[in-house]
Image 1: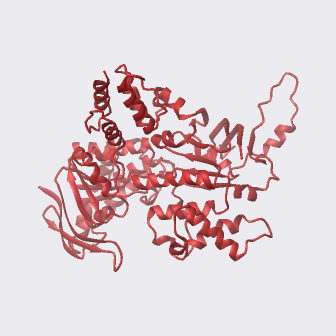
Image 2: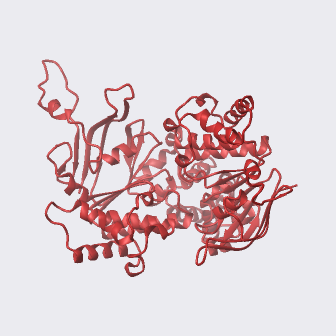
Image 3: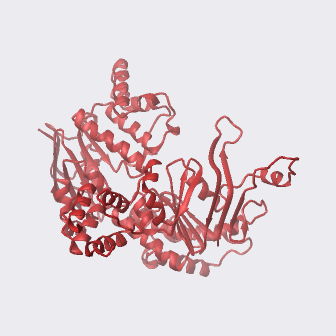
Amino acid sequence: MRAIEFRDVAFSYGEGGFRIPKLNFSAEEGEFVAILGHNGSGKSTLARLANRLLEPDSGEIRVFDTVLDEKNVYDVRRRVGVVFQNPDNQTVASIVEDDVAFGAENVGLPREEIGRRIDFALAAVDMSEYRHAMISRLSGGQKQRVAIAGVLALKPDIMILDESTAMLDPRGRKEICDVVDRLNREEKITVILITHFMEEALLADRAVVMNRGEIVMEGTPSEIFSRHEELLTYNLALPRIGEISQRLREGGMSVSDTLDIEKLAEEIAACVS
Amino acid sequence: MRIVAEHLSYTYNAGSPFAVKALDDVSLTIEEGEFFGIIGHTGSGKSTFVQHLNGLIRVPSSLKRHRAKKPKKGEVLPPAPVLRVGDFDLTEKKTDFRALRRHVGMVFQYPEYQLFAETVAADVAFGLKNFAEKGQKPGKEALDAAVRDALEAVGLDYREYAEKSPFDLSGGQKRRVAIAGVIVTKPEVLVLDEPAAGLDPLGKREIMQLLHELHSTWCKTVVIVSHDMDEIAENCSRVAVFSGGHVRDYMPPKELFRNAEELVGLGLDIPLTAKLVLALKRRGIEIDCDYTTEDFIRKTLAFKGGNA
């Protein structure tokens, strides 16, 4: 079943501003989709349209069977959770459990249920032992995991991460990727991961590339990354390893466009011995 | 300007229950003309160290007493800290920190969040007005000329951008404006905390290119703090590894990444080239490169020819 679908969606930020001319995009239930694109290609606009922080000018957006409109917006936001970029802009309380509870309290869940949801959400992001901790004392990666827990407490069907790892150090980034990957596999949550890190896109089942508000490439991550020339025209870089294997090929070494370090080393070894 | 730090220690909230030791006996020399890299985990003391370099964090004033102290018989006093940037002695209270800050420019993480003025030109001019010598405020013409130079140096056309609101620009452009606002005083040393973080791959490449241009034209010495090991391997003349408030090593990337296993042991990432060198080594192929992509490709292809 389709978890989310954009049909001929058009949107503009007012005259002269950025616009999405006509966007068609969908993700299946349980799928893990990565969205790539340079700054200003429309990735975040897509995220904001998906839970109606922005309203399309025309076209329709469906979340499962529901067509988004102004009446069901709160219901939809419960099903589509978004985690944003800056961990410090997404916390409302000073203690971890209060912050995780905020969304669930807001939709009026009973108290006992909220307690259970906090248990579940903190365990899912591996932060149970920080339940009573001050958020201000956590690392960036821990804060982002609390933000994810806040979304999880609403038991969403779809989770959108809008460059949620951009401000984190490599350790924090890995924490988030591990959590998201596990939520996708174990809780079957549909994941839409918007990222600038080509390496993170490799986690996904499918990747799409956006440019000027349109989807211009689509395929498995390794398919996408084998289309170098095309990626460059959309101002995207190859993952570093792709760049290296390409340069080796240009130098006359017959290596494939694998994105796996061990495999590339194996191929180089085969060429030189 | 040479940067010399010896036996530098710093504790946040010293004397309180929240005391955290951020630097512990750090000694580090950065030569004039270097493109120096600082790596280490969050909380390793990197930012605390670089904030010393323009006096945002001062060497504690207990130092004077320490220096005056005569050791009792048989007692060995711990060595006194030293912190010099060019001719500025940063352990002295009397030092002209305003002048120091003209010479040592500091670009923080996500500097675009610090833009505040109504126009790009006003934002860039702020630092120049603020750090001017007492009684020597630059005139309007001098100010305009300096702003123009700084904007052009970061690759933004003065006529097109000067009167725009900085908030209407793209992320990459905002970051350039923020850097212009720092280099406008023509600092000899430019310190940047994670200059490329949060940009898309192309934006990253452009910012690093810009830093190299600035390094060859405006600022003799560039110091970057980074988590991106590829960035360090590609760009830096030498690298210092911070860990738990200490400097473990500082050396050229070529030597540092030769001991890649040790860095992995510290939980730090290593550049892709170093990962490939390790993977090839396990297959009996020794590539002796400086860990830049250029050199790795050249040496690997040469190995094929059998002369490596």
